[in-house]
Length: 70
Image 1 (cartoon, one colour):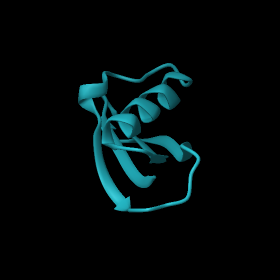
Image 2 (image 1 turned 180 degrees about the horizontal axis):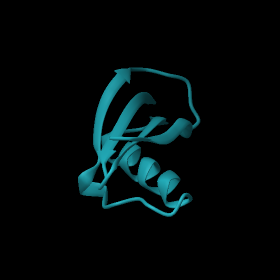
Image 3 (image 1 turned 90 degrees about the vertical axis):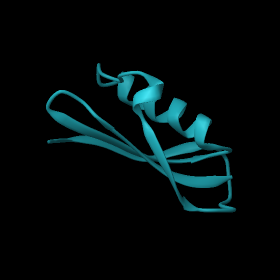
């Protein structure tokens, strides 16, 4: 497992999530699913993911998420 930071620019907000996932694809899917709970998620291709830390203990989960005004 790896720890990723995921971000996406919305119309007036920046959405973010820190997740523990197997790979970048799963990290983006988890970030999108988490923001869907708040009513906005965009598309998976709109999310960027960057590796924060490798070889983190699982399970896959969302560590933190939210949005800020751009």
